Length: 116
Image 1 (tube, one colour):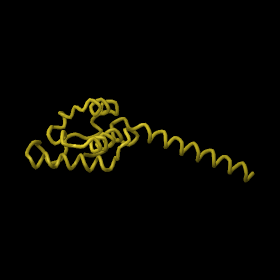
Image 2 (spheres, rainbow, N blue to C red):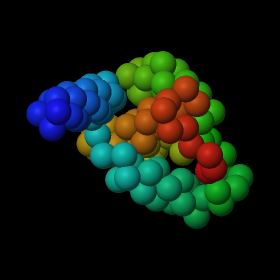
Image 3 (tube, rainbow, N blue to C red):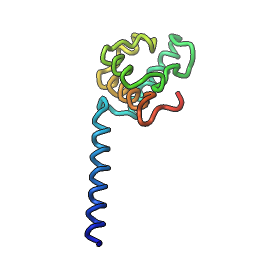
Image 4 (spheres, one colour):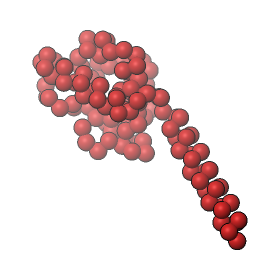
């Protein structure tokens, strides 16, 4: 009896871990937390330069679906965010991190953003 329970537990654990790995590997592959920080830093710089209306970001990851964010970031069309020169100055790694943040918290993601 103990052996059957152990086998069932091991199988359930294997399924859980493999599903977690598959879901994690579907995204862009950057650093989600660093992306959130970098996005807020860029937006703050834009606000201080007077290039945006509000001090808080008007664009949230939940404003679009994962497919829409993928299209925007793959085409590198950041005009919706404003502050084009600040976005142009970002490294590819920073853009990937921001993309990962937006993709991971899109409206149709498992954990959509709930606030800006």
